[in-house]
Image (tube, rainbow, N blue to C red; front, side):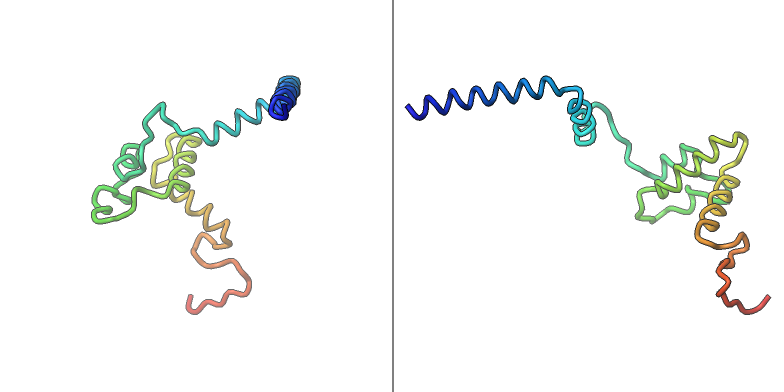
Amino acid sequence: MLVGKFHIGGGILLIIVILILFHLRERWLPKLRVWLGKRRIRLDGYSHLPSFQRDIESGLTSSNFDLVMNNSGDTRKGLDENAKSKILKIMEDNPGLSFDEARLKYTREELSKNQIGPDGIPLDPRTVTFGK
């Protein structure tokens, strides 16, 4: 008899939970979609691994920064993803800007963020330099 009462009580509780979830679905359903989207394993397409060849195909090489000649024996799997995306964004925002010019602009921005002047000398007033 106890088992039968437990099944009836559990069934009623399950129905109540389902009704509450159905009633509040506008609140939790979008959050569930975002949560599942972050955790979903992408099986629908091929994901390219970073490589120097893909960097060359993206236009991230020049005579001054030759990836073909200068990466033999390099164990890395391509250029730094963060720097690469920022340089490509600079090139996209400034049509006609060469890879070398975009790389120079990116490097100057990074130096500026780290309180280093365009001449390579730190901008910290406590800096001591010799010569010049």
